[in-house]
Image 1 (tube, rainbow, N blue to C red):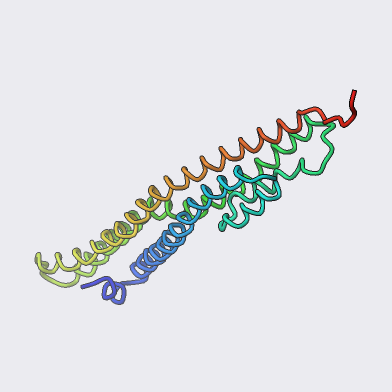
Image 2 (spheres, rainbow, N blue to C red):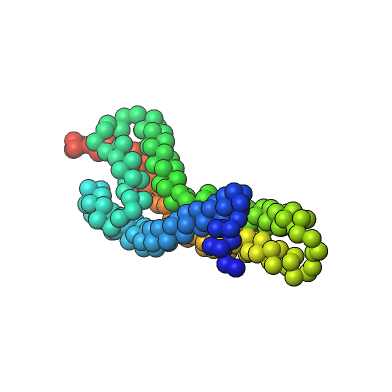
Length: 223
């Protein structure tokens, strides 16, 4: 007997457990493929975007280059947030730097939240799917034993079949959980690399603009 037959012949609890495992499997695989594709692009885009920014001759040119490279919009929000000091008087440098710090921090948190999206689902599926499958197994064994009580003489052949069918739920739970756990760990390592690059870029950008704000205004008068 396969899982489809077990689902069609099972009671309401068995069908509920099987449906839940199917939903968890589909949801986790959608997240795995989507995040794998997104993070693969983002990893290269962050490197190219930050390199293009520091190689630009002006801030406006840097912003244009970052916009062209940053397809996942991970670096550009930081560059846009740093425009707080652009075009403003720097008479109150301290307050402007503090505003810039808050602006960059908020933009960085938003970007990191975007990178982490889906990780909670993978962790939840990886940790709960085996127990959901085990619940289906326990209920299936209980249901099979209850059905055998009125079947007269009980033999090992009558027990092994229903019990073996119920154990398929445990295997299904593991089959759902293992890919989710592996993907969570692999994608988490990629996310950590991207986060480190973005945090380093934000610190460098803050240091650059803070130094500019601390410089005294240039005087055009000649002595």
